[in-house]
Structures are given as C-alpha cells and as structure tokens.
Image 1 (cartoon, rainbow, N blue to C red):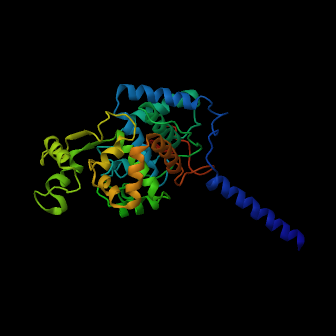
Image 2: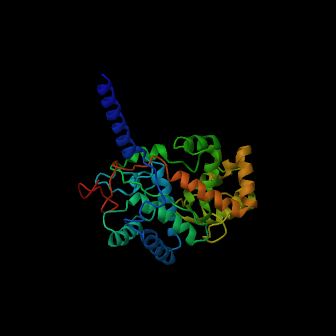
Image 3: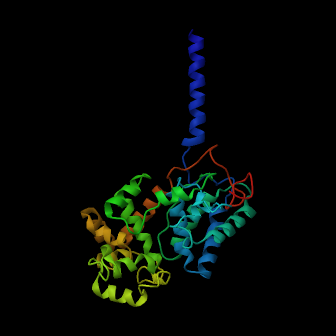
Length: 330
C-alpha cells in the first residue's frame, strides 16, 4: 500500500510539474540569452529605423501591444489575419486605426535572420512597444520574455474587451480590473496618450452633441480648447485627424497629464480621470513629477505585459506574425 501511495504521489507531482511548464512558467528577462543573444539589439535597431521614417509609428507600436494584451492576453493574437474578416484587427476599435502590422512583420523578419524559429511575435510586440517609447523620450524598462503566440483571434472578443474612449472612470476601472490591472495602472497607462493621435470622431460628440443635446458642448472641456477643436473638427468631418493628443509633438513625457489637469484631454475617458479623487491625485502627481510618471509607466507596462501569457508548451512560435503555423491564414 505504501508503494502504491508513493507512486500516486510521484504521478501527481509529475502532472503538477507538467501543468506548471505549460501554463505557469514565468517570464524572464534572460529567456533568450542563449538562444537569441542579439534579440534586443535587433529589435531596437529596427524600431529606431521605423520611427525615424515615421514618428507616428511610436504610438502605433505601443497601441498594438496594448490592444494585444487586452484581448486573450499578450499572445500576438492582434496580428493574425482572417480570411473572413473576423479577427481582432477587424473589430471597430482596431480596423482602420491600428497601425504597425507591416512594421512588426519587418521586425520579425530581421529577428528570424538572427535566430530562426526562436522568438515569438508576442515578445516582439512587447519589446517593440518599449523601444518605441524610449526612442521618443520615454524611460527604459526591462521586458520579461518567454511568451508564446496564440492560435485564436476574435473580433467579438476585441469588441467586448477593449476600453473605449467614451468610458466613465468606473467603467475604465472595471475594464482594467478584468485583466488584472488596478485603477492606478489605468491612470498611468492612459499617459501613453502623450504620443497618441486621434480622429475627430472621438471629439465631435463632446463639441456638438454632448449628452445627446444638439449644439451642446461638454462643460468639462476648457472653452478655449473647445473653440480650437471646432476649427480642427467640423461636425461633418469625423475622419479628419486632430493630430497629436498633447502639445509636445510626439515626445513621450508627462504633458498628457498637464493637459488633462487643465481640462484639455481629447477623449471623454481623459476627462473621466478627474471625476475620481484617486484619478485626480495621480493626474496631479504625474503632471508635477515627470520622472515618477516615467518610472511608474514602465512598471505598469511590465504588469500589462504579463496578462494571461502563454508559456512553456502552450502556444507556439509563429514563423510569420500574421498566420498560425499550420496554414497560411487564420
């Protein structure tokens, strides 16, 4: 009986080890040290080349990583093409506005030259987001690695999982909590809008039809700022670009919080940060202490990058980022 009991214990232990390898393995900063030692240099050089050619790709690469992690976790699913237009990239929050797919493909191609079949697209997204932020003035943070790529990409899940620029503070907190991020993470990560760009579609309701009242303007908007936005965004031109979401011309800094504090945030969700005591405090502190914001942003990005990751035997290393390995299309 003792032998049988011992065998059961050994089997149970083995199963637990297998489960931990498949689903519980931790990300590590040294994951590719032996298998792809030049990975970070390759990605950084390519990102610098991309952003030098188009400054708008810095927010594009950051947003790709963000939108990837909020749907099914950080598994590269946002990059998958769909023959039926039913993938994450086809969802209204992404379609026509999410940028960087071709650029990520080019980064992946360079990585494959250096170490074929080793590095996931999910890890490339995490590194590219960090390097894009650093390229335009942000502070470096170490990126834990070891993610695998997922097999599923869903338009429906993207629609239900991604935060909206029209959400209230409570809705934003709930949305972020659903993926394991807290209210502070939400406010700090909103600071990524400092290099963001926006279409007039997100501003027009605040300027001309606030709360469904024709001609009404959101009273939380600074009146002078609202007047300026009307010149940029006529009511019948939703696809016009507003341009940069703060006045620092694409530099990653804390100026977003200065703008929000002054009631000059573009999105309703930006203004919503001031409707909570916690939100107001973090906005005020981030506006006052730029170094602190940059450090906290890196911490929250690492936390976001750990959302529901696939590791060990779960997932795969895609050969190309736009398709799973078993066929040429999702």
